[in-house]
Length: 171
Image: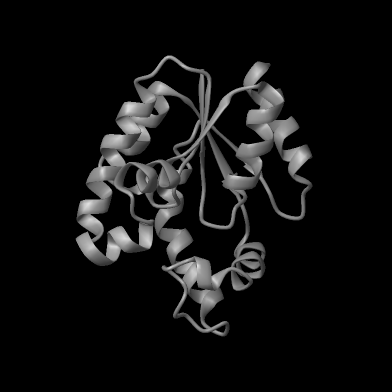
């Protein structure tokens, strides 16, 4: 079984996927880290040197390869992955997809502390961050909402989130 976690940056995909993989004893794959490892470049370097179109092509190829395996995997996807090509369709066909939902307020609070690590928002002022997130989230929610089920992450302990995911998957 492959469990794919989708959601906006800052929604908790990396943290939740780590706990979920440990609890289920599944292999953990972070799609962005896998792309970086295979290309020996960070995601910001790939964007800078080769451009977003090149990155999205690599992302799709890597996603297809991972989803074609028969392993037990927790797959943490980049925030933009579901938006491109027909990625959400193949994610849903080849895995159990979970949308980690978070409010604009929660995302703003979490992301304002991580801006230097997030190229997409690194140059956005704290004052403009909520508006940027709200607009971006509005555009992406159409794709995230195609996940097989959603779990709210606002003000919740990651262990509780993981337990809810397991409960929904195995009922």
